[in-house]
Figure 1 (tube, rainbow, N blue to C red):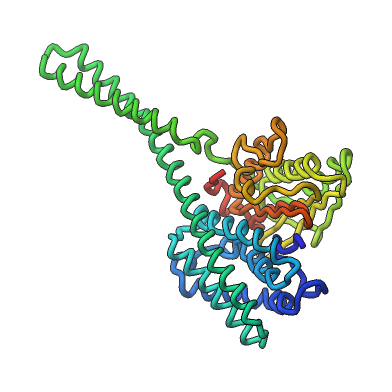
Figure 2 (figure 1 turned 45 degrees about the vertical axis):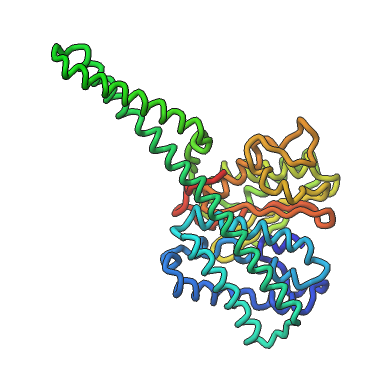
Length: 380
């Protein structure tokens, strides 16, 4: 049921409950009305481009719907937390939202959803309604937490950039004061120059310590070479190469899937996901799918095998960290952090879901036209 992570869970799927199927049939209507309501009510959302406003909401919607099917509810709860976290992170990176705006738009989503269900005559049981309300409330908190964490990271990056830029004029001032100190015959001037030198040296030490403390500045901005790309061709190339080593199934929603991205960066990101699927998955075929929603594209890589523990769902995206269920020395290296950085630099996100029953899925979800968002801030 990985289709929920791309916003393509089908209402015709027979193993879904009637409530889930009814909710899925209203997806387009709810999304359209929600975007209209948010633009009308949330000031910071009025100028957002459609793919940025849409964000990961299709995946969020489908995962909420899956909660209403008993067989899917356990995994859907885990997926929902991951999707909500990415939603909050993308809002921090790609908008001028504050925490109030983030919470407000998700409250609007809740109200829009229940209004649409009522208008369509979808009769939820008391337990189903309570499940949706509790899950939405929980994901509002999850999104807000992620929003705060990413905002803090971006502030650190900004401070690092400012601190780095300060060192040049600071060094110039220090050298000028030293010249005055050594060439002036006026003892008063020399005394003041000595104070300037001492003060600039102290500021320089403080600046270097600040730079050492902020690791985000070490990788620098992520530069993208944006061009017109067929994502289907990129996926085919990755699949064809990977098939030399493993069975890879390629699924495409439409042909071609064209847009504006960095071909090299996206290809490397997809290759990293496929290579991880080969390395950590079972012998079952790997699924590589390309799908689309409103002005966004999703690239999904799925494999069967030992699942990633929920407590590792964030650490695997951090540099030089590995999942707790991996043997020492294997590691996840820099592959997944790179994938996240590529997605975020395109104005998008990476979603992850993993369970014993369903296997592991990663989804790169980016705007179809990344040109307006190229080089967007990245928390990875």
